[in-house]
Image 1 (cartoon, rainbow, N blue to C red):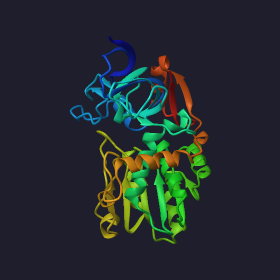
Image 2: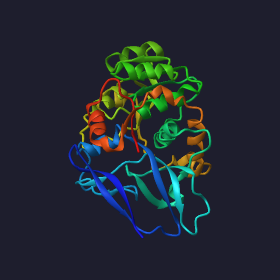
Image 3: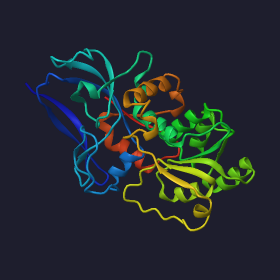
Length: 335
């Protein structure tokens, strides 16, 4: 027996189509999920939507389909309810709420191990942040700030705001959040940033907070290639700049012959697909996921003021994210 579902495909640059998907008979190791909601990524997913990803880049999740050359089925923040379980599944049962790294689709089938059970007390609009929180935790692990450090977060989208909130709970001397959008700066301040400013003001704010030393650590998570130069500019001697943005095909131009070189600044890429090597004796992916749920149970998700669209209005929702409205933090599709 087969069942039909509907899925969102990006069929060309800035082109959204809803297609019928035929789901095969459920295998013994799989579960079926009826989707409740999914979130549109303002960073990575927008690169795909805009055609700013290398066309020959390999897909890195088994739930993706197509290719970056278009068409492609892409997305990685889906929450739903288990509607059926394969004969060999013991980890889940019908009615469980789950989070899965899966594109936008009304019904999905995945191996049970890929679906993360959502703990009681975490609402769907909060659970949908699981992938973003996992990324934010990885960024903080890669940065590894020390007691009393001055840290700068450049870029206050959802991931940047989650990083800000995580860092604000550490005993830093100062946490400076930078973004051109006033709403995002205000949200960062509500989440614990000690200073907020626009990019043009960042150098002066950091200089004042550090008595001219420069920041001890900087996170660049804006997705804007030009911001990386600003991140390096505010970093102090022997400081680390964690590059959490994925720029896709967008070129990055840097001056590495002056401040960067003489200040011995370290650039580090942060990517959620891997754990920091020195943490692996104690951390694995399951432990990191446990930490995701622990942090989401505490996170004040209402500050993000999500904008909700019906699944059938996906084209309008994607276009809104693409336009980058000043009052927009997160867009969610409801099913």
